[in-house]
Every structure is written in C-alpha cells, then in structure tokens.
Image (cartoon, rainbow, N blue to C red; front, side):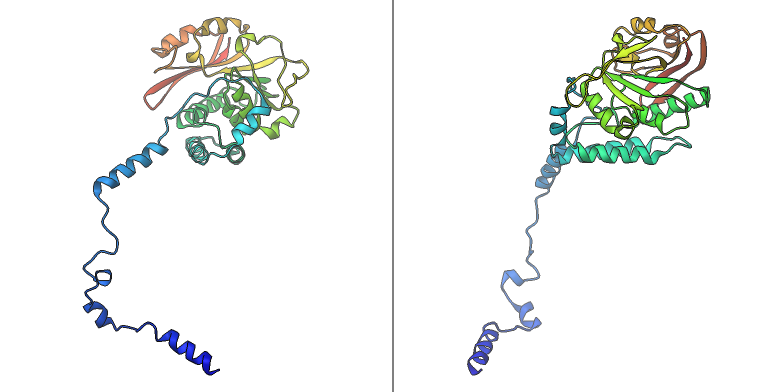
Length: 318
C-alpha cells in the first residue's frame, strides 16, 4: 500500500499548479494574452479559398443530357455510383421545381416521394434540364389550362412528345383529369430510364405510365403500334393504341416542326407550346406561333413570361 501511495504522490507532484496571477505575469508567449493563439489568415488567401469553393460547386443550369441508347443493364449501375455533389445538386433542383409548382387540388406528396426515391437511388445523373423553375411554371400553366378546357372530359391515351423524365406526366397523374394512360416518347434513352424509374408504381399498374425511346416522326398518330426495350434488353410484344391527346412542349427545339404537325390527323386533340429565346426555332410573337399551328377548334391560346423568355400555347382540336 505504501508503494502505491508513494507513486500516486509522485505523479501529482510532477506538475506544479500555478495561480492566475502567475499565469498573467508569465512572459511565455504561449500563455500571453497579447499574443494570438491562432495566427491571422491573410485576407488574400481567404478570397482565393472561397473562389475555389465556389468554382467547385457552381454548375451550369439546364445542362442537356448526352443522347444514349436505352440500356438498363449499363445505366442502372452507372447512375447508381456515388456522387455526393451531383446528388445534392439534384435535391436543390427538385426543391426549386416543387417550390414553383402551384396546382390546387393536386396530390403533391406523391411527386415529392418520386423525387426523393429517384435522387436517392440514382445520385450520378444530372436532372437539372428537367427539374427547374422554368419547367415548373410551364407545367403548372399547361395543367391549369387543361383543367379549365376539359374539366372531367375524357382525354383518352395522353402522348407526351419529347417528354424528358416525365415530370409533366407525373403532374397529370396527380390531378383529377380523366385519361386512360400516359406515354412519354423521347429520342434519348436516358429519358426512358429516368421516366420509368420516376413512375415505378405506375409501371406496375398495367403501364399506367410508360416511357419509350422513339423518334416522334415514327409514331402513327391514328393508331400507333410500338415496342419498348425492356430492362432485360429484349423488346416487348407489339403494343397498339389510339392516341387521344397529344402534347408537345418542345416544338421550338424541332427544326422541322411543320412536318410533324402535318402528321397529326384532323380532329385530334393537341397541345403545342413554343417559345422565344436561344432555341433552334424561336417564335417572334404569339401571332406568328398561332399561324404555324392552325386548329379547327381552339379552346385556349395564351402567353406566359418566365424569366427573360415567353412561352406560347394552343389547346384545341386540329
């Protein structure tokens, strides 16, 4: 016992406790109140560091996706790779989109869940060209005017042309509008992947929603027969249906939109949207836009300004 007490006494006596007065009188710079504990960082260095951080996280909005052939076996692993900065950016884009959606009576909880699931599952793909403030305002406008024009009238099978990841279709699903199914056609296979994953629940409901990589000039707008590349790489059995309502929000991005419009049969229900700005085929005015898309029965013609550009829309029977 004596040896333990001695060792304990020796351990406590190694360091002498100094009083506060002794510490303040000390000339040791490490304890002087006049000497900084942490050296000042030069203002120039701070600016350089902040600039580097800003460059790292600054991204160009609405970056177009590279056009790829649909291949679930290669896309799923690639888009599932960890990419924290891209994932955070996608969350930001989704929040911006949802913040500018303004639809009364719609179930916005479902689209929130869809965003949450796809961004969590596929963090390595850029969604900014689809989920942004401009698209949210445009989609809100389209849905509102469809509701005013048709109410509870039956729209049949809705064809979304150049539909991207299907956000407009998702908003249609969350309204009281009456239709049979929704098809989203896009030339980019990445859009088919994202749209199908965004609507996994509807895929299991006998293709309540289904995306397809297809050129819209290959569609028969009277009675369409198409095949879809499935997840296993095989083609589906031929699927035939009659398009009821055709929606094309990308006519300003088509070099030959007039040839496409001539393919639409008379009395077919259509929604066309053009725009101003830096696009392949901008429309200088609403009058010019209206003349390009004549209709037998117009149910809506209007203009909306989003940011520094205008969008023109016509709804009716061709």
